[in-house]
Image 1 (spheres, helix red, strand yellow):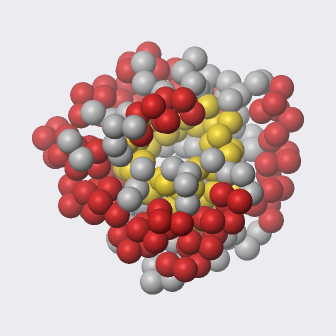
Image 2 (image 1 turned 90 degrees about the vertical axis):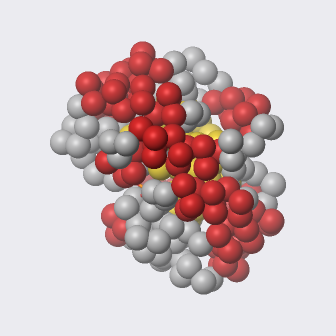
Length: 248
Ligand code: 1GP
């Protein structure tokens, strides 16, 4: 099993990382497709795989996709939690995340209280993370009942990020929502990054080398792409986005 916290810490010494998001909803991704996509992304230079989605994920699909990705690439598999009922000890670690700008306490701490005993019993390594949803927010914004942060309201985003750090979170994720038409603005990334000392993850709507480079230049430590990697059949473009994210 890979120590993901250590892996991230070591890799960040040489620059920004790129993580690939795979949605293990069986209606969207088969094991065979997951293996093929994971291999292509490894060849493009991705550093790890986040596995998770807002709907339709089960323990079985999460385990099956995780094992497939691990066998195909040997890269870290990180659970990006979907549901309290989908928990697997196949993953290298789980992002134990609070959706800090949700209007519903279920997404801040209550689902966590339901899942925690099993997570602890299975001894799944966890990284505590604050998940901050910025407009448009897309499906996760709706499902998680987020009080969306306006893309211009950089101070509000920074406030959530700083409070997360003070609460002991080890990662902050600025999320525009999967498939967002506009990613988190570079100005917001810059201000949030300036105000925290923990790694900053940015995702949602990044699908061009320009957008990936803009997020990296603004200070993102880890850049996530999901929709783009699922849909892109052009290996050169895939590589260009990963390279732009990593600045190599
Ligand atoms: C969603 O940030 C991720 O949680 C990825 O978004 O699917 O738009 O790349 P995309």
